[in-house]
Image (cartoon, rainbow, N blue to C red; front, side, top):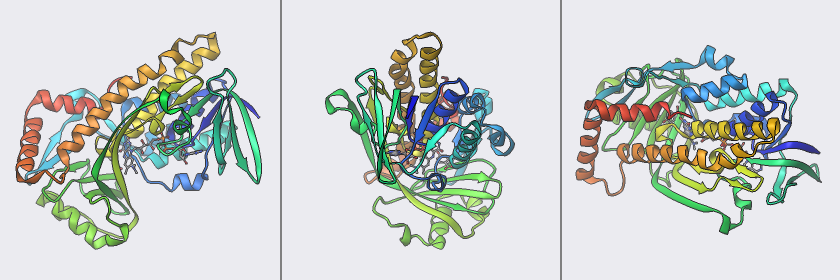
Length: 389
Ligand code: RFL
Ligand code: PHB
């Protein structure tokens, strides 16, 4: 098999890059080690920046997003028993769209099928080869046979645990990492959300987040110990803990019901530099991870794809390598700002082992300053709606 670009990973990064390339007449193959249903069963991000929506518009995969996505022009920070609204619209002139990553992925998969572009699912033992040369290739196994894809470029969009980054020699890559000493227990339930906007709550018992997928489907999270087991969290225990961490007015308004998804995710900040190795380009979680507190992970995957797509398009339209050469630097500049923002939101909102009574007071003072200073609120809002790309 041959394609201009071999894309490893059928998450949002790989599928969006594939669609933009297909629309531009640049043929590509998307490969994933798992099946479509498995990918669509994962519950992840929920908040899209305007820049992400714009790129999905450009790809032509945003009709359902515009019909069903919820436009939010603010969110609340809850602490010291009260809610404080951050008015994104007034502070930045921008909104965010609440629309699940699962739906983004479903829309991109459907569009890929309509365009007739090739995807290979359940590909075992995917490997990238010769990306230091001008003729790289990818191999994988399926039905007991080893297959080969020759290509001009490989896009490593295979997430944090993927094969692409791991295939780079250690001396060629630098990594920066921080693991946080807690996780997020997330629950999805067919109940109306407690409020019409998201609530990020700082509480001495730990962080809590009230989010949603629609006006009838809620997504809630509570900070929990990393070694907690999901089985130890009955629905009743979850709802009780959530309510304890919210201001009284919200706690009373929570509609409870049976959860149909419950999982614990660890929190980590991670960046690999550079994001290009010869003809192998990393994009999205393959290159960087942020804790979900700032809602940046999916949005960063989209901005990486924007820079990478421009580089590839220029290469195929006029032979220019300038965009490809600039890719890693442009992407990383934006990545580090989102890593900083996600880290600072995480530090401000969570209970750490050494937070104690003093640390709690400092967090509350920081939050109080943040919501009462227009300058500080604007800086928060500007980062939350997403820096320009
Ligand atoms: P993905 O989505 O992980 O897709 C990678 C794909 O690569 C495949 N793969 C392989 N394929 C072939 N061979 C291999 N060896 C392979 N190894 C892996 C995998 O099967 C998979 O299909 O990465 P991508 O495309 O870079 O997308 C990144 C986003 O998924 C991620 O950043 C976000 O979900 C992070 N995130 C959030 N981001 C936001 O922007 N806003 C949010 O509100 C938000 N909330 C969240 C989040 C992540 C969370 N978790 C579970 C970590 C909330 C949570 C709880
Ligand atoms: C979500 O709805 O899953 C979500 C929303 C905002 C975040 C993280 C996750 O910061």
